[in-house]
Length: 179
Image 1 (cartoon, rainbow, N blue to C red):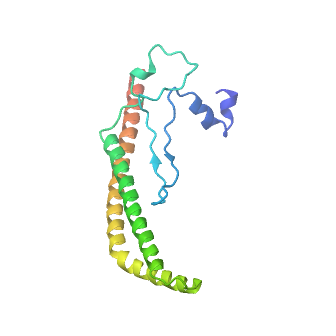
Image 2: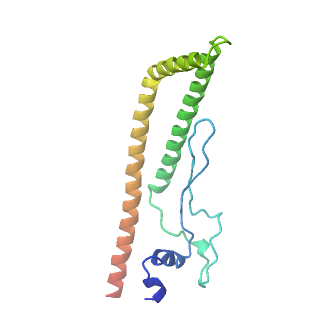
Image 3: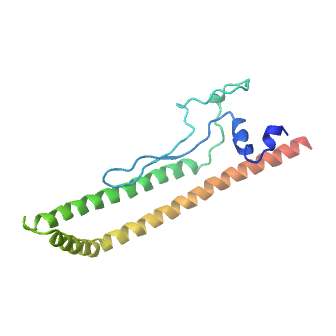
């Protein structure tokens, strides 16, 4: 083994340098001003993003080949994650919009000469009523979100299992060929 790769702190970094494909990493965007949700920016190995230049000379173009065979569940899982994110965002966008509108209406009903304590009491009453009124709506959203999230986790497990079984079959095939 190279002396540089023997260091436990440098091993993962250097091992990544030996790959000819760029790593896939999902990112989180800035929060939406109304929903306060931070959107996920899913990074995929798309053909429109150039691969980094490598010092390794390959006899074939790396763009000709899919870096790893995709499982039949991978696209379904990607679409399901995006739908779940959209569902989550739209719920909180609608909820926060209605909350701000209701809060403004509660404050608009107060007389102009009301004190800070009057405003605080009005907002406290508005918030209590808001929670009572929104409780069924929030519970329905939570139930739906949990069901969708569980389905997404099942697909993620299927994708991970198919990757594992593909790698395992490659290892066993390699051992049989070398035996």
